[in-house]
Length: 260
Image (cartoon, rainbow, N blue to C red; front, side, top):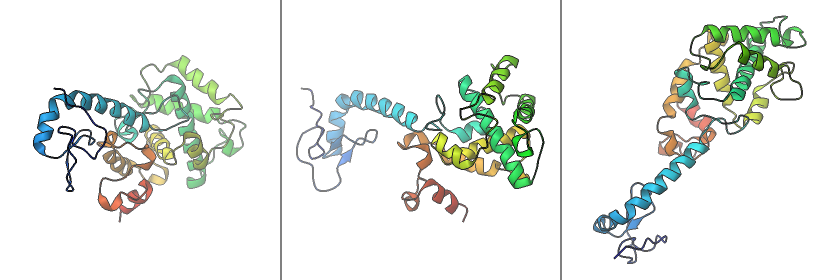
């Protein structure tokens, strides 16, 4: 006789008897099927396995969707972004429109940091008085093209022209004649930490860090947090470190504590 799968946690999934007061045995995969004894789990396994496997796949797809970074602002995000930065594949799997926008915002944030943090000024961008940062952005693209593997395989002169055209189009976020800030980026992408990714990519393209303070140790640390992250059903910006004392902290608090 086929075992009936009850959704109530007050009865055993196999024998359908009331659960004992002590902690019941659970299916380690779905954590929803509960049994009064381990023998009941074994008796029910043949029937439960098919449903459990299907549910696990559905939850895996849902978790992956929720963990894509950034949550908005692009056609689609990617999982494990800091790992992709380390392997120089941060742009590889993105669509053309997303690549164009990320190149522009990486440049805009980089030029802002160079101006405010290093005092660097050039007449080729808006911080030096130019009406548009196109000329300076073209230098940024030159540097990206020199670093093999940074840009997608489909990148060519025509795609570069499309990217530059996007930067010259007014009344939209990626306009090269407008200033940018981490606050604006956080609001646009829905992730207050996304500016960190943009800065790391800019460091890769330019071949040096702002004020010679490399973000590579930070990237390595953050990519370590991404290991097994798809098992956590929560947005990337709110990752908890898998340690009891950190589970009630925000990612920023946990990250800062890890250095202490």
